[in-house]
Length: 517
Ligand code: KIV
Ligand code: ZN
Image (cartoon, rainbow, N blue to C red; front, side):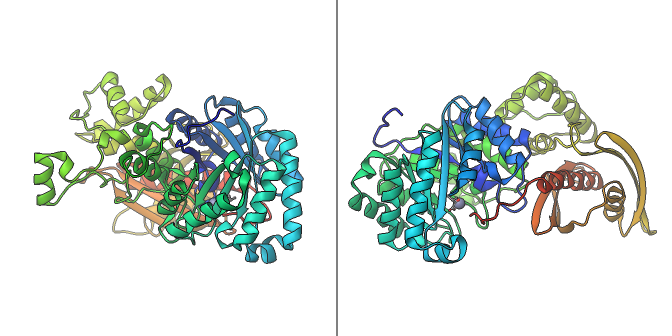
């Protein structure tokens, strides 16, 4: 591997592995490929594409991503056993730059309850499995899971043995989001002072955000000598999520004066990545989320607006265009043509192929017929709503008629394709949405429970599109579906169908024995 500049920080994105482990964030193969392609274009150095042993779907996703990614290394995750490691290698072996990432729990709690091994046995297992991984692949990353709650002297021992066995990256996970910035730095410093070979390998930091300190902890680790940060777009991840890639990227860019580190990232793709991951995962980005939230660059108070008019720098530490946010005055309506739509979409950060643009154009025209002015938010909702245009989905809504009003019961008649075969179903319900969901259930009976149903208006006005989110739970596993339409009931039907399609995907994914964080 080429020697890096000593201040270069590698960005390791784990949106497709740790991010996808978020309850409800299941992604399809084509969605994973789309995200991986964008991460590669953005300059991410390593893409952790999945956990190949977890399911056929994970294996396939890691293999496909390995086949198509040209710039970044493609990494798969494996527990500390030969079956996992070999499966992981088979998934990444065709990548231009393959990496195996293997790990084992090292803290007292993990040793006793998770892996049930003594310290000696853990040390032996590390040597054996890292050596095995190296027999396939030169680039092996090793992680002591729950490192920040591992006795410091034992942490030094495990890291030393992993390096001796051939690991070229040592990742230090704060698995439960427990550490704080000063401690995060001290752990890395301790490793450097006690292990001479540390200078020859890359040290990585992997933080969870349970106490809201993931970004601060990762940056503290970098200041102490870590040169790889593991992160996810929008901070997606189990519980409170992982370190947010966009926060690391912009902190390093904006505070070059005190954080003189470089990355390969093109930050102008951040907003596009954020929108794509939000759409695909069904996890909305909170309005006040740092860097990519809707309000991150909005100034409402009089003092702020006045300052901004006089000099943007008074209240703005970075420019919207630095993350790819471009403001345009181009209002779209029913007379806007394809060229205007293409320009608008590209300003919003999306590059669509001709077929995708054509499909969007048809849906844009249909929307513009119903709505006088089509705002950026409307287009973003259309872009995120690909459920109607794809015909390879397990379930697809073709037509819907609903009767509702003051007289109950309300009724729904739907035409739905199940694996390509069309069915017409009718049902009643307590309200139009209930009637529609009951009708859909007739085509695809299931026992998943509705956990969450939310509607929000995309813009103002009574003709606004509604975005509906539906979360289902089946056997402890969650899936989230989302859709938009000017008709709230149609949006609900599409969101429900979207969540059922994800449920079908989720069923194919067997949980591996050991829990991961
Ligand atoms: O949080 C964690 O410990 C992990 C490891 C698998 C690296 O995600
Ligand atoms: Zn993790």
